[in-house]
Length: 131
Image (tube, rainbow, N blue to C red):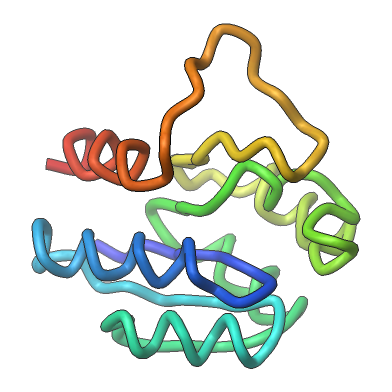
């Protein structure tokens, strides 16, 4: 089963997600796509099986994987300081893949009723769902 991990900016959240999945669920193959080369490189350091960068990589892979994981901003066009293009957000939103979105408050999207936690707590919750 393939998981697409998407992140932008420095790729720190994506790297943490990749590391946790690889440690706790090594049976999954991870394709990490960064909105920029720094994010892609950082996720590769986290143990991603494959990396790619940019809009086309997001669009291409979103339709081919079973799961998509990333911060909630990946489904909002122009989030992450404009790194998520509307085409990326649409491809992710329209994908048949199951989506696991970590609620981050820096994307101008808030999920009402979700308690504020640290990123590691959200990643632990993600791993429990994947197991």
